[in-house]
Amino acid sequence: MVAEVVAGVLLALVLIAELIHARRVSRAAVLAFGPTGRPAPWTRITPVIRATSAGAFVWGLTTLLLLPPKVHDRTEQAPKTETRDIILVLDVSPSMRLQDAGPGGSVSRSARAAELMKSFYSRIQSSRFRTSVVACYTGARPVVERTTDPEVVRNILTDLPMHFAFRAGPTDLISGVEEAARMATPWRAGTATLVVVSDGDTIAATGMPPLPPAVSRVLVIGVGDTANGKFIDGHNSRQDVSSLRQLATRLGGEYHDGNVQHVSTDLLQQSMRSDDKGRSETDGPTRREAALAAVVTGALVLALVPVLLHTAGTYWRPGTRLPQQPARARPIQAPATR
Image 1: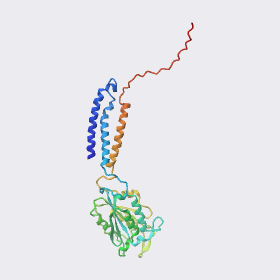
Image 2: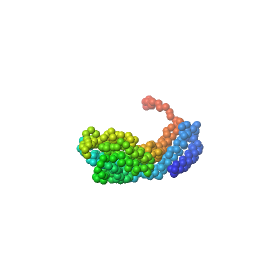
Image 3: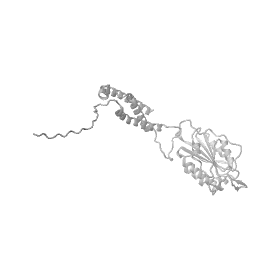
Image 4: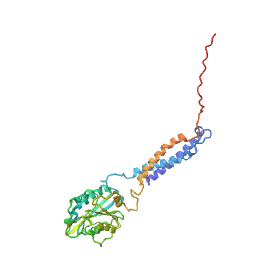
């Protein structure tokens, strides 16, 4: 609001100055524009152009001065209106320790999950996101809630043997979704993304809890070999693509096979997109961008108008221009004789 007031005051002052300038020019119109005393017709709009350009220029500078500085640093805290939440439901069952994941099938499924999430966080502006981690095996336990430090998440994915915190038994991935839903219930609507990382070894066909309004995006990532499994606890364990895809469908999200390929940038951007009704950074020009455009446009117009007035402001060209004639050789006169 302050920038608009300053720009309006300047616009009025420039229009008054243009009116005074026009009165002074009218007194010397014959000398400036010839016998007719009239400039080129297009010059009648130059007072409005100059006043508008000056107002836009000052509005842009004032807006940039008053706006908080934009820091392009992932370690800095973003404004509260721009923050989003990521809820990571991580399968920590013993089957996640089987080594059949990765492009060569030589790393464990949990290690592959850590690689996927490391790539995940390297391509988002981590200062805008708060991460909550829910470990899931025979039940669900919240590990950390709304942290902004990616190193905390990395430590959870790589160094914590969280399966020791549960009793042995079949994996209950639905309980992890229930815990994530409970955690996100008090949050603002449309500001959270649910990410589920699992091999889909055992997923119940019923009992899916409804997600709260805060969860707007769901991404289910599968790890482990999809064709050849390994025996554990008396059954053949492999990534169950059909169960994970069905889980994503029941949650209204997307499924990605992360055993060989990382999450694509397009899918990542789609999963991280906000559903806020307000304008976000990617919805269109922001106030900062509009101010920069106003400064550049206003300064450019103010610089070009005097040049245009000098070159095309009048059709009268003072001075006499005689046609050039070819030089003639003078005849050589003989010296007079007495």
